[in-house]
Image (cartoon, rainbow, N blue to C red; front, side):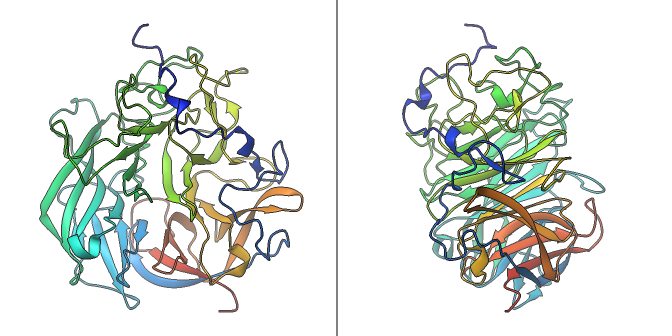
Length: 446
């Protein structure tokens, strides 16, 4: 077996639930499998199937450049990740003058249109006691990153004073570095799972089609490359899962024993793979991991991700063959390429868009009509969000205008301490200006 061949020798035998039957949430409510509920959805919701969904927006804070994340660790404050390099503190509806953490001297220069910068933040489950938090950012090329590459992916731990909401810049401890061949498809989300492990989203390395500089050869010959289907040469195009409370083998983290590639060929940090640019991920109230993956030119998708799952890129874009009239439904080892649970096109019937923005399975109390439904958006949503729900006629995904206040271009979602949804927006189509804002979604009657 040469270096291009894909093998896991039955890594799916333990831990992977077959998800093919879940594929079917389409933008027009039609298509195969639409009678299947969204995983983790409470189908007994009193609103299920009534078709009425109403949402309003209320501005929480504004004046940001490009807010790509907002986190709420339980202290009543909100921490806004502003892409050029600062993590800001919002308390009592005001943006504090002093940032929580300023990384502008450690990130690449970001301006105009860019997918680099400070891209993710996760607080340790015991943050109130230990002050530990994890930040994902784009640094200038470090040692080990080839000269022709764009930059270095950095996942770092910082310590903070939770009472004062101040992080210590000089406390940085690098957890993980990944050479990034191109400047785009950087993903960036970091999330602590219900199991206490840190989940890290990585893009396919950039450029188009998962090809070119920095892209591995893989098992699929119809499309040259790439990293989404490679498990041995780099950690790109994957969801990683690491234990940040332990160290082993000289690494500043440990690999959970039940990761699907432990003891198998491949890099064992990988939890699931076959992604292009997973932009935002979240855990639902029943522990399901929802990951949005930005498409190439035709389709956007939402996946429910499980251990050892292969989500298809660049063999497939959504549920469709990529750059080929025909394509396999499984790898040479017989492992399935798992379809997304939600898909919508760039052009066509139903909802359309350009860049999917992953959200949350709503578990709050403020908006009855959203309970148990997955809320997400598109970068060019234009004052609306998308809501996926199961009704009497099957699974339906629709666009819902946000009444009152709301920004034009959606960048990310978050949750407050009560599980209510927060949405990061901007009026720009690049990293510029001060039109970035964070809104709280509410009921129109609130």
